[in-house]
Image 1: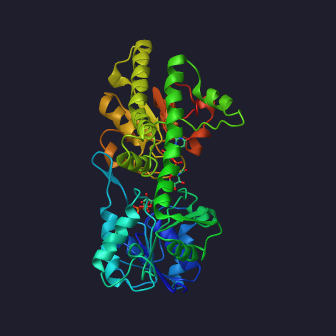
Image 2: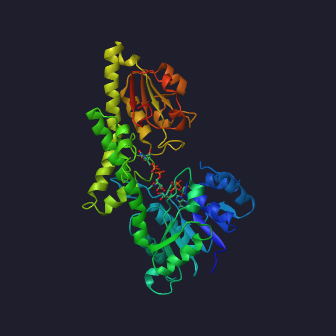
Image 3: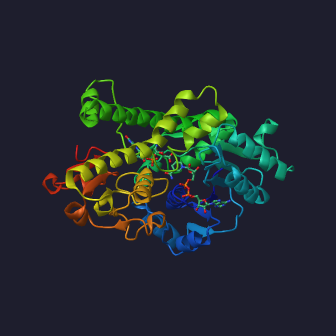
Length: 419
Ligand SMILES: NC(=O)C1=CN([C@@H]2O[C@H](COP(=O)(O)OP(=O)(O)OC[C@H]3O[C@@H](n4cnc5c(N)ncnc54)[C@H](O)[C@@H]3O)[C@@H](O)[C@H]2O)C=CC1
Ligand SMILES: CC(=O)N[C@@H]1[C@@H](OP(=O)(O)OP(=O)(O)OC[C@H]2O[C@@H](n3ccc(=O)[nH]c3=O)[C@H](O)[C@@H]2O)O[C@H](C(=O)O)[C@@H](O)[C@@H]1O
């Protein structure tokens, strides 16, 4: 049975591109979000998030009448849930957004509908979703009730890279985790409307674990690189040269150290595995601890640089200016959410008695967390006037800075730009 109308629940960095791509295939898409501003923006054919190429796809889809946003759930043939799944307290998963989304779609479900959870979730969440829906709609049969359910349910995680979403959404292989093989087949039928990558079918629990595995793999490998950076600092070895040399081995691919790990995925998702498997997930937990400790190590490096600067210059600490290059959570984006660079800049500003400056090409005003503590300056001002430079995010414009302009004697470089 084909899909005449699709409803995407949650119109953020994942839901909106997904809704737009389905609509671009001339499927009627109703996007649902509790954020009225987002809904109004989208219905004007505009976007409220930053993602290359997304604005024109949304604009055309709205203008042609295939994409409409609303705050109220409506009946559809398929529902894709792309709401947040943060952690709370001691890194425990918060499924309240998923539960709220389930409660909102339950009343409009009808036999033959497909429900897909896309949000990154702990293993077992899809079964929990099915239980919530079944409790709300005892008149319908769900996959957990055995053969011939009225409702098909699957877990189909997203693995797009911000900044490349409009390409990867279509080109990446997609893990399709049905609660039953028939559910997987139904979900694959939906994604094949736009997917050029392969639909790889498995069980929902395996699909949930796969998403967490992908991001935990990356976090562990970043932690290895960060640990190397601490060791090399002690040993007086250039970690960037070391990694480049080691990576010449045909089977070695060490990632890059940084000031920590940011974003609301790599720094979050591994904790879902740790929370469910506290005894076994020792390496995954330790990697999170190594990465989360990096900002404090960077602050110590800055403290050492200031001590050397005071000894050599005779200045008082209050006379020394420290310039932080970069605040975003990774290069060439404007997203400051969960950014270790922001954490480092705030640690410096809270500790240093002199001026703390920040250079961030993707923003025009100082973020609230730094308001009154740090000053937004240009690259030129920082290079010409700062005593100490702290490289935190290797935005392309920073890598393009002429080495001759970098004359400071005290540099803390967490990205190997001025190695
Ligand atoms: N951002 C990314 O690059 C990726 C995110 N993911 C996962 O996708 C999920 C969504 O992430 P993002 O899109 O980045 O989050 P987001 O925060 O950008 O968007 C979520 C949207 O859901 C809305 N929302 C919350 N509760 C709702 C409800 N009950 N009904 C309707 N709308 C509701 C919010 O207002 C927000 O607009 C998360 O689980 C995340 O881990 C997975 C891969 C990549
Ligand atoms: C396995 C994988 O590559 N997952 C991707 C990841 O995307 P994300 O936007 O979080 O970017 P990222 O490049 O992993 O960076 C995360 C953090 O790690 C840091 N980072 C990254 C690579 C590296 O060598 N060193 C390093 O320090 C970045 O600076 C950033 O602070 O997480 C996304 C997600 O799940 O949201 C996922 O869809 C993406 O495919």
